[in-house]
Image 1: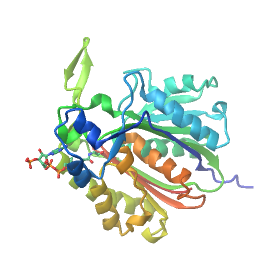
Image 2: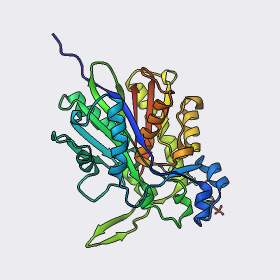
Image 3: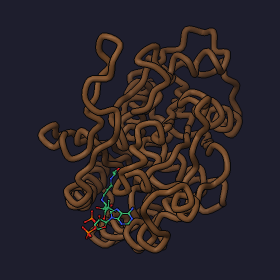
Length: 325
Ligand code: UT7
């Protein structure tokens, strides 16, 4: 008898946002030379959350993970693979995933590592976890996107500091005989590394280069709209599906205008897109799992729905995952 094909399926979602929402007018009150109307018009962002100085990516990841594990009906000891997507890890090393493992009290030797693909990190993490599970080596993965992007923002650069926020989202991904993840695709093109970067490094006890995020906003915008539609078609084609079969588009939450333009290019009505950028800002690797959990807990995304997740980030990196929830 043939053994059943092993697929991977999301069995629980969770998320966490630190502190109170910080409005655009709160930023103005802090002395940033901007306005609520400029930020809303150009980005769709009204609020973001900012972590305290004492809060690290693994702290945010812990809260999101506990919620995802509970939603999956699991306990931390069931987890055998931990992947944290982050560009703002607690330390150079150990990884935030290893720190998270310890905070969750997991003592079973579960593999734990970080993925650095900036805003595409969660899609990369999900892709890796899916492949681990399909290989049969692991059965119950925790995939987290966790960021404290406020740490790498130059609060004197109004062109970038108003865009980002902190937070974490997590999913439990388990071996299953039913799909689950239908198709994934991840890509990168390092020749675009300069349009979005934090070009600094720790060396000899100093930061060499810049510790702050730098961005050519318009170049990112154009690249994002082009590539997100392409990668969406790639995963649809790989699974023999078409765009009308998508129940929900869950894109990286960078900017409402990128989101609208991508949905239009794909032919997905905006009512089928999960949009949280207004309340969360751009939380980089955390934005997709935060939006997913928001939609699940808000009752919009239901079991059996077909979801298209897609992200783009510094590197440049991009990717998409088509899945049955
Ligand atoms: O995860 C991927 C992350 N990155 C993105 O998603 C970024 C994608 N790009 C964008 O979303 C847009 O390019 C931005 C929202 C970043 C900028 O919008 P834009 O329409 O490309 O504006 P711009 O950079 O061309 O700036 C237009 C004007 C400039 O003033 P002048 O030169 O026309 O007088 C800026 O100085 O807006 C000014 N400006 C601001 N004004 C008020 C830039 N930032 C601000 C601000 N408040 N925060």
